[in-house]
Length: 203
Image 1 (spheres, rainbow, N blue to C red):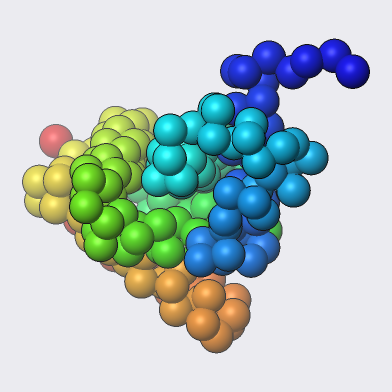
Image 2: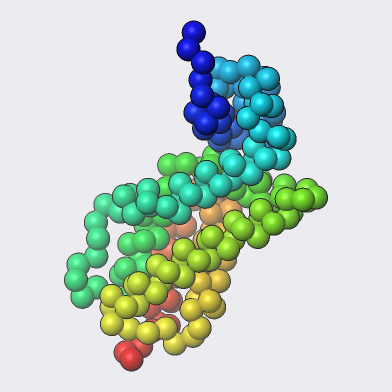
């Protein structure tokens, strides 16, 4: 049997850990469960990662990059036409985001679990900070692009708008994970898009 390169095995183990965590929860994401899921030996897990904490860190990085990266743009079924308002563009983005949420609820739950795990685990506090720095930075850039495309400017500081957006999404997703009321969640997204649109003006 051909030997799997360490880099390839590492990626396989991260993917396996994501699947186990999304399916069974972080508490059940043991190194043995990850090895079994990946079809690898337990020794290979310990060879590729110095600790379970390092592996869980890579799990969070992988999920965040997927949920906030290029896959989100690819999920937009339609782009707003030229001349679209800020509210229309925000609504389109939030609709694309929500499609990801509903398709990958297990991964969404893992991000919350790992945030709390990082905050409570000595040496991993910085991981939660990194997580939200990424969220804020990518959201701010998108909001900046939307305002520019609409020929508008934000009437409140962009970091404030970004924090409003991220806190709304966090709360809405967590609430949906509890009750799975997609109709109410989508209605809240629509209303919030209008709220953000009202925070802009012509330069």
